[in-house]
Image (cartoon, rainbow over all chains, first blue to last red; front, side, top):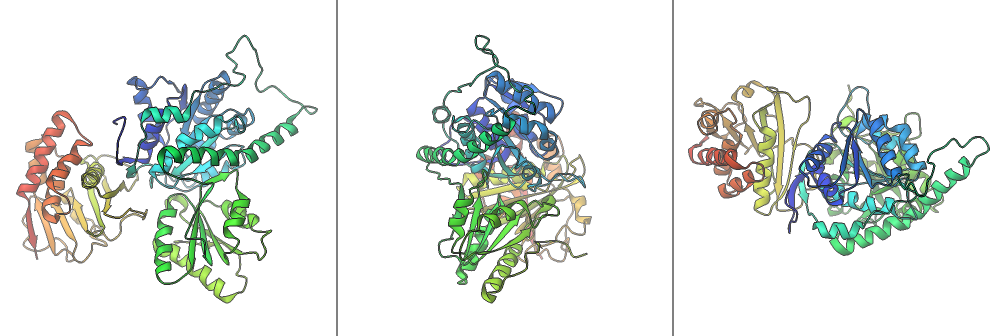
Length: 400
Length: 184
């Protein structure tokens, strides 16, 4: 791939992220391949072999080892990245919490894919939704450009001294990862200036200043206070995420917030959605608007920390909100995003109705018609003025 | 130009996925918005493979697979036996087919217009292997007029280089020049 391009080029989502990683040029990448992430680390391994980057590429025998090695490298004082999907993400599980609690600014690309079983390699958000309480920041992208842009911004956010917490950024498996779409690439120098040099904090390899990382803390230790400190860093990260986005906008002209409203200002009904389906939802919003329906949308960008106050403000005037989850929380009142949005709006007065929709599990396609069906439920509920049941509504579920 | 949706049918190893990408690159070379993606499954040589390309003057926001294509590209003639092959093809849709046969009757009742070429023979002659994908992209350019041959050749250069690029350029040029467009 050429180093600079004036206009957009056509690449896969995975190629876009591998290119971002090349420009970041981290000290260490520890990774294990898994569909649909494979292309990212395959391309990166090629760049290492070609001498296009200075990275130490650590090939490991599993994702458990990938995250373990990433923790070791980051604690040692290296700017560290990795990437995974689905089962690989699940296999990293216990180490996700370790990385977050050690406050290591690791950046991980996670290409969203369903979790087994039945075995399924296609897109949904079950993998990273399951990791939402691990202490990592979570940023979801919609398309190729956002996969690239979020990857670059994640480095700055993770390494900011008010945050110092690992960041995972996501995009939809196949729909984005394996699909060709447009991408505008920054010049290498601009990325280098934006990212800046890495500053290691208490690196274990600094033998003049020996430190211990991850000792046993015990019943009378500081575990509880440590966890509260992690949560405070989450609170501080809202501002950091926005500041980094604003600085990014200055060099690219592409603006990002914690969330992305679309035709929401005077909306009476609205859908909240994550990932690539936001594109299809915008189409439907435009179609409904042309018919005079006051429909709007919010795309979720930052899921952890969850900007509940921003959602309460953005949706306070909406009568009925539909929340589209591409993951389920079995036995809960609804999917993970539904629970967040409903909780965020609990203190609103008047309180918008919030209805749960589940779609796209295991890569089930989501048609504009399905999103129109969801809007029709919202419209009918708004018109009736009554409270609708908050049972899950499944989009494009087979009848037989 | 209204948005166009193309569905490619091939067999693993024939380059259906790459063909879909190369067509996207060709449209991108004309300043169009493009999207291209394969239908993923358990890929192996010889298995039926499906890939998609969309292009439009407007930004492409739809992320679904393609169910009502404007054009079908069938890279392997044995796929004509698949019952669902022509599903969703628009009434005025066009078929780009690799086949050594003559078709006095349409290969399927819903096909009214087709561009047919013995792309396997062209590929064996130009590349030395049965990789007819680039030949058919040339045929598509001729039969539809949606992209120019020049853009198709530019698109090839995004994905191939050296000797292989040269051979495929010849493959695409012959696809453009030798294809027969038939209406029923």
